[in-house]
Length: 266
Image 1 (spheres, rainbow, N blue to C red):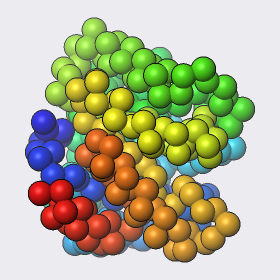
Image 2 (image 1 turned 180 degrees about the vertical axis):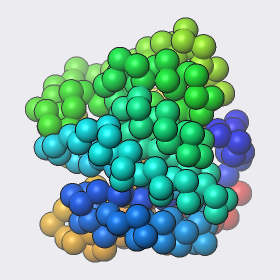
Image 3 (image 1 turned 90 degrees about the vertical axis):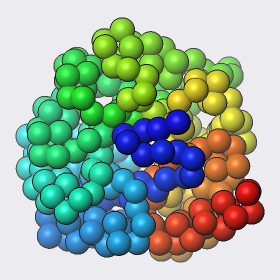
């Protein structure tokens, strides 16, 4: 199985670069272009296979920004990291940002709304030629915390993602361009997140790469740097249950964990 040109015979690491002033996980540390590019380069050096650049916070309760503002934040970062040899992913819900980021060198579109927020996103993604991550979320960042009622949590998430995959295929997007993300923390409460992690293997029925974003989302009573041990433990469980791409803030530490996991799994 491959994704965006990467063989998934081993787990892959997606480093996070938030070009935002209000991320829950890094509090604006990489809001400037210079800091964002430096972080992305450091993550490349630490072993990241993908660099995920985002210009809009999607934390619970986050206020959206305009696509134009998002472009102002991310395009130079995407261009510089792509020129440096990074496989860049653009984390966006907006078709304008998708198109312009791909023009700047991004080769992956990572959309938390699975190409549903913007009515032009599906066509823009299809025409871009980029690989695409489809994530499960209900509502939007402002309302999702109130949308946690499920009868069959993992089954409903799997069904939703299967529907979005079918929509993409009907739009001319080949399956080998797709990966899925169950959306930990997006319209799921704490108990549901752990239930989803335990049952993550059900998503393997989709026969697509599974990406997970667990980094720094748990142990919120601690500062971001203090959440590392729990983040690594959860990521390891996700690998055990079928995940093949880990979206993380702490690349070097995750790489070491992945190497240990691979040795023990051999």
